[in-house]
Length: 315
Image 1 (cartoon, rainbow, N blue to C red):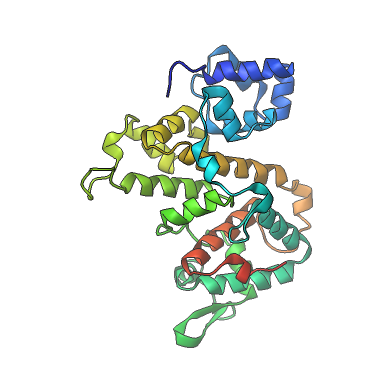
Image 2 (image 1 turned 180 degrees about the horizontal axis):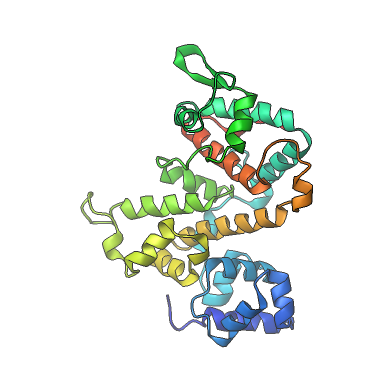
């Protein structure tokens, strides 16, 4: 990272002063605790987390390309390769799709289960393991043509209400698919960004032996690199991602994926229904966040099965 550029702390102070916000107003608008904002501005927080950064920048009304241009004077090259927000293609799952799913589940529980059962059956073999994990009974599924496991609506209810997760993130999900979702402005999970980073690091650098990845080219410590790939989201640091993005020649693309994933998490948290309203939902969902995440995991598995979510799910 270019040390000639202003620190994030100085840049945030400039943005707050330009809007004539107080510490309390900044906290209220961003959702960042006032004490943390104060510690950032005083320099007690030297390494802001990505969650803090995305919250503050959203409050400022600035997108990632605008932040990079204003703060570091950089052009977010990968943003130029992304689809126009006004003409999004229908081949990826968007925030609007997730919103429609949650709204549909609240008011049309049985129909939601019907459609999700279609999605489950489109996934296929990975659910063989899920069946063993949650010990589905005969009433939940049956053996169809070619010995294929076929799930019904009761399986949907059990799988989504069970203490075990429905499906893990597919470890074979390809780099090009994640890149396509990002460029077409589809919803990205934090696991998508982590998977992209893992695959990116495994790729040989230009002029390097094919069996050698790119880890040896990085100055980021193994502990920090491991945290970005598998650690808690609250520990992802903005400067670590900036440095890694630069050293891997991503021109803002890697940072953009993590940024989008954190923005989606924030959107889900703001969407979450209060506890008293969740009690009257039709169905066994733990909460709207769990429903959205499981739906997106199904979308990833459907991609591997060469099916589009919109071929299985209609509102």
